[in-house]
Amino acid sequence: MATAIINSASSSRGLGAFAEQAPADNVEDAPKPRDEDAELMMAVAKGDEQALAQLIRKWQGPLINFFYRSLNSVEQAEDLTQLVFVRLYRAAHSYQPVARFSTYLFHIARRLLINEFRRRQRKPLETMDPADLRAVDNSSGRDQQRLFELEEAFQQALVKLTEDQRTAILLLKQQELSYEEIAEIMHQSVAAVKTHIFRGRQKLKEILSKLM
Image (cartoon, rainbow, N blue to C red; front, side, top):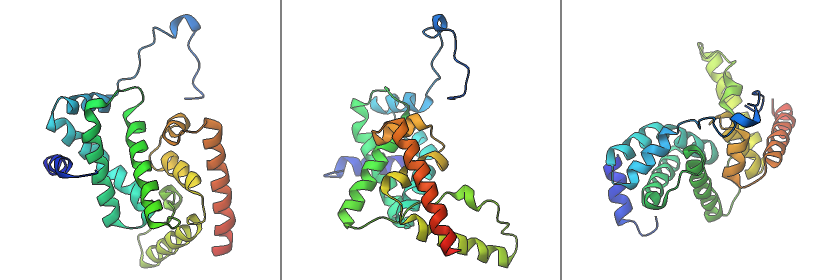
């Protein structure tokens, strides 16, 4: 897939907050956690196709999930995921690891998603939190039907969330990013991100109580 994306890129025309703080005199000496993905991205900038292939293998699934829960279309999710990697490849020469790679990646993904919403000129289907469905046992036909009904109810409810609420909840619950990382991706404050998540959850509960 890496080769296909590289070929596509060359031919495309547009394409713990709760952790105890260390003593002040040790803060500068504390080693930063290694970001292997950022290292791979730096290798991509040097023309390492295998490094690109590794990034694709790791992030393809999470990106497809991100887009699918927003667009409710596997085909469109796959198309936008490939476009993310094309953009990633094209920008590799100017990449600077000033933030975690995941933050950089999902910033690209969100920009593409917003552009898609604008192109359609309609409100997007919103994402659901898959964790909310884990309590349902799908071992029987009746349970599978119940799971389907829950999925439908969530999709109906989540379409009423704002894009900020949907994105914040998705990045927190599905991608397991921190509030700080989400704030960087959305170019908003941590307080604003927490507000989006709180209000989004409250709105979901309110709507779902009427649907179920």
